[in-house]
Image 1: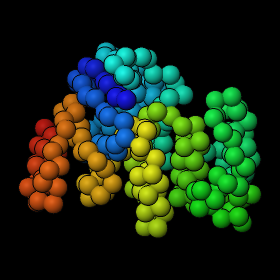
Image 2: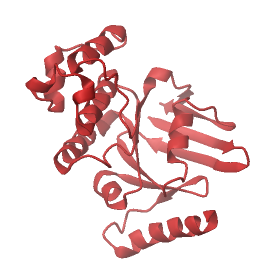
Image 3: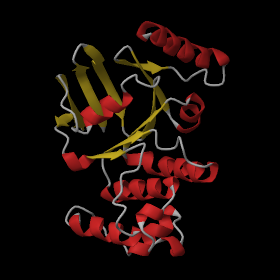
Image 4: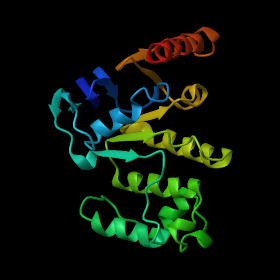
Length: 237
């Protein structure tokens, strides 16, 4: 399976954010999408999730030599700031999600199995989501995306503000999920991308560039990325 983006562009007034996104992502890999703050990572995700209309370009899935349009339910999107209904308990939210998506979920399990899977303790399952920590809200957001089994999972800075333990749990979870999915992990933290991701992609000057990880442990690899980001920062100043 491949997720292919062809000549995607998006501007806001005179500001050109995405100039010519032309890239293919292979299934079974985690891609680290690196870029400075303001480079357009979230804009790209919003276009792919169809929350924003791109000015031009297209994207599709290719399987067994055939290409097809991506259905809305085939893209999961985990926001950097968790968006959960805080007036519901964790259990109520999960039950609601399972009920409204019953027809599309391949195998619905008992609710407590899902909580166990995400490491959410029994005493927290019936608390209001407004009383969850940022990390727990993030786990719930991730959980519903996992249950939905999207072909493509877009992760917008999901680990940046998590504590060390929760962040490590989430990294292990993502590694276990990648086999039959395309996972694109947006971050501005280079070491996190190098630790978690199979491929590194740099968003700079509105285009995507694959960065060779052959010399992963060499300082020259990091220097190349930092130089590209500094150059763009100077041009934006």
